[in-house]
Length: 324
Ligand code: GLY
Image (tube, rainbow, N blue to C red; front, side, top):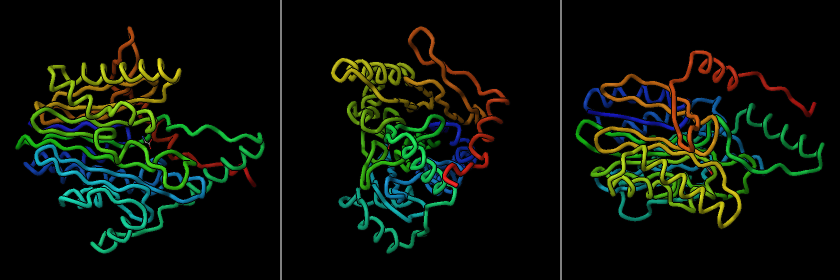
């Protein structure tokens, strides 16, 4: 049995590609790196890798992480510029006993030293988004709130290989217009991801500042350890975090999570409308699901052809320059 789950529709092609590695008995880490690299390289996803939207200084700063649930190897990089595939750096760093989490120029120097490809990650499309945002803010004389994207934010992938190894990986450009150096949950162990091959793995997407307050991925894996199914574990973690944040702070940002257990069963939960995810396993073809809420719980259904068409059309639509 092998299985893979990823946040958002954008995980589809990466998971389909990486599933070939798992199908042939390959390693879970290679499959996660391959899936996330595909997504990082696709220029129309404005929340991950090449084409990711910049910070308030028009610099693309990326975060990524990788955790191996069999060895507990963990590697991460944060606020890195010009690294084509941050997930490859995170995975490379996971092999060491120290220096596992590098940020900024130190991470960039190390990536270059080990021969990772360095490129300017700011696309013309991302520049238009940035300049349009400044234009809109100038027009209203008001700064817009920083919010996760609806439709595609962090890509988080959890996988199980046929040798029963489980791992998780994440990659993101974080919040559009964030402060230089800002890190979200995605590279933070226990928040953006967690994996333990004897239990399962989880990964999160949404407002990093709030997801971190619940160490949500660790919480989901512990929920599974305590006997919950992946679905119950995800639902419980999201509902509890939302409840406590509303109680203490009167507000709660977007929280969406996916998980798998050691048998390849999956779970998903969210507190937003429009969260999508992709699941594939040795006995289940790759499918995109869209979530909805019913009786206070997250449910999901397979995405319709129309939904899938609209999704890509929206991502790839020509951009209008407001500022010209
Ligand atoms: N979840 C992505 C971020 O907050 O940066």
